[in-house]
View (cartoon, rainbow, N blue to C red):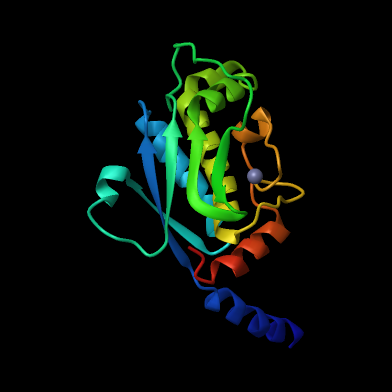
Length: 197
Ligand SMILES: [Zn+2]
């Protein structure tokens, strides 16, 4: 009986959770690897899907033809592709950021692919180098999810762990698993059910 009652209590929560559709417009400044791009999209979507957010991705040219209610724009600067070209190295500054104005979070962000490439190279070992674009895409997806957390939850704050923590190490960017912390996930879920943008 108890088991049945518990099931009934939990089922509505599972089925009533609404999904928020968000369109991510990507604006690539330089080249990108299709494999990295595919991996980025899958990883970012996987992370925020747990908070009820469903992502669709468009290139800037595609997005110009229509209008969308929930839309965020990311500029992808640098080369989003693992290769042997040395990146123009600037060790300072963030891997990605979200624009703000007068304290308000804006739905515009930037991923710095050159910085990301150089960062994850420091954590790659052995066979990692055979799947460089996959790992770069995974890292891109995680910093994208981090910035989406700021945008969709409308907060400059950070979580204590997981994707929303204030700094992600090179190891965390390419590790097998990195999720939103439970508290951050619940926060994002409740904030994103409102019309946020
Ligand atoms: Zn942050």
